[in-house]
Image (cartoon, rainbow, N blue to C red; front, side):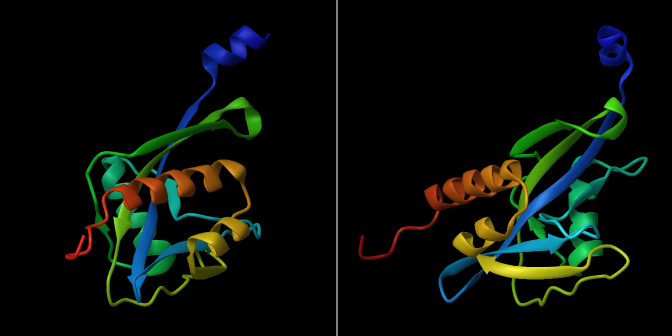
Length: 151
């Protein structure tokens, strides 16, 4: 029975973004409160005809009202996990940033939007896998930060 389920389970494709801005030299991350009360990162299902990058940007816009800029058109990480009914959800994660915009939750999409520094964001995120994604993206962003002119 398990082999049959594995062969015939559906793969649900989603895409999202680790979205950030800088405020006073401090990186701030955007979290959304899902309708079930959990905190996560903006993400959602791929619509027919969309690329993964287009989905990530659309979901950021729909959930936060932010017009974001992707760092690259390729996902930086992919997360897969089982969901109800034996299917598997695959989320392709992108890194995106924004400037001079104020996030605003669309109540038809999410309950709340928060912009927080890394430590607070990690504390608020509901799932360990999402915390791991945020930590890794922050580490990678730290690696590419420009060096001070005096360095």
